[in-house]
Image 1: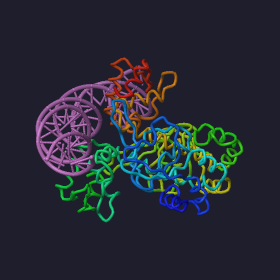
Image 2: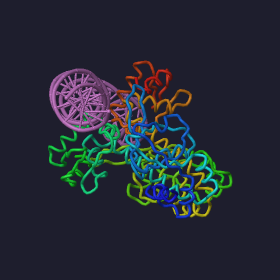
Image 3: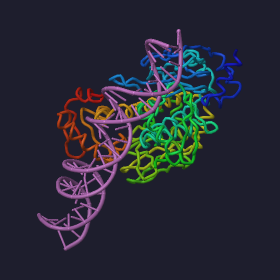
Image 4: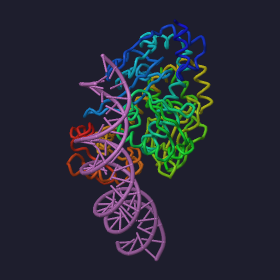
Length: 223
Length: 223
DNA sequence: CGGTTATTTGAGAGTCTTCAAGCTGAGTGG
DNA sequence: CCACTCAGCTTGAAGACTCTCAAATAACCG
């Protein structure tokens, strides 16, 4: 069981740089949780229960704007962590978290994690660079939203998410759309437009094949 | 001199939570630099010279999009730090940094800082929560760009930047506009619209008086 | 198969940007 | 002391992109 948790942690950027020794100690406090689809893990304003690592399934972390519109900050898939900033910074959750499908997570409970950080000087040091990477990713996201148009953002996402030139859309398209700061309508239209230009091919089951990665790269750079 | 550097560090979120002891050791490696207006501190892709803390003046950290458009990620004013993520994460600078006016900064050079982090277990631990706060701020910024309109973003900025219901615009309006993801034209128009509604008063010298903070808060919440 | 939910498509409206022109204000030299 | 100049700011009109609303289609689940 503990070996299992270790493996989950190993897959994620935040913990990958930990030494085997530290990793074991962190894994020891981990608890595996299972969730049904659409189950709420925590809500905006809650005290963070702990640091989550997705093992299987997917969690969307989102804000709800006054007016009911929601924006997906983070689509956490296997190997991703979330709520790390709230736990480590000691402030309440800045967003809601809900699963999209059947999901298994490892939870590192806040009290135990904080104790560990105080007890073991090696761990904070190694987490620091992990946090820096997370900042870097946020800056990328910000850049994305700010200086790319719909086609550019979608192209970049496709390029990043592709494996063997195939992208499997996680969960509902409208959540992915929200993550890219698009309505589902615009998302759909942009997808067909990319297909018309021969850059991608829409296959059944939410699968997308990249026909012309170089062309997509061009679009994502803003042309 | 060292006392001076200590004071500068003390003012910023990243270091405020450090114990007096650690603070001294960090301050010891700090170097004060002076810059002319529009002087370039580093460029995108450079190895980060170190962690900067603004003592006096202002630095804008910005990206240039293909096509020449620039976006201001961060307007660093006294007490703000920048390049922290690149130094701590060990990757190249993701953006350019340039002063807007005569500026004094404290630089904590990368090699010394890294050495300090390795040598002293206490410092990374205390920096971790500072990084978490920076993540939190980035998420706010992202939220800002994504779910507020021009008037909402400007209102929020004014409320945050105000002291005694007066905001002094740092540097050029067009840089502030870019930070809020607006063109300078839209910025100007939005300002006059807020003035017409009696929420603010535009005074000479780039000074803005908040006449109705409650009303601004209403606008910033998206109405 | 029927009901429900998600996605696609169409038409119209709104916001922000772009392009172009006029304005303002500080610094300069006559 | 004043006109000149240049950069930044403001204002106007036109256009682009995305959103909203509405309806049709497709996918899913019991």
